[in-house]
Image (cartoon, rainbow, N blue to C red; front, side):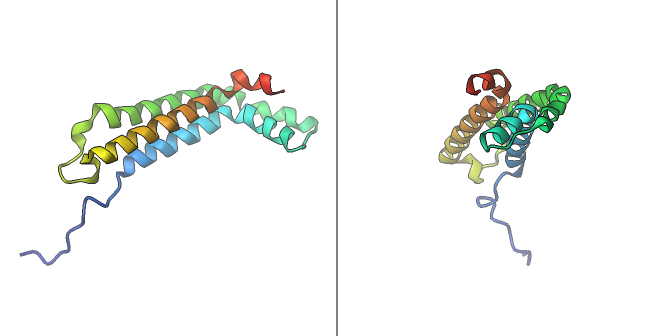
Length: 126
């Protein structure tokens, strides 16, 4: 008989799903930083010629764009295509938990894609 306490696998969240979500959000923010930053500053009443230099991140925007789509794809892959990665008895095996994860994935993905596409619809706000 082992004297080590056993960890309860039903209360341990899947950390890889959390990191995929955080990565997608950060990549989307990086991809839209060239446009969201100046618009946010203008809406707060902060102006000046120095704001034109905030577009310097435009050159690396494609990298963040690709990373965003990659993280969203990895999250989709984990939730829909790798269903057998969850062990029986774990919290992720519950259909209620799976539905909640998928709902949050789609809500987050839509928000991230809207943020990613911000440079295309930003001119309509000015």
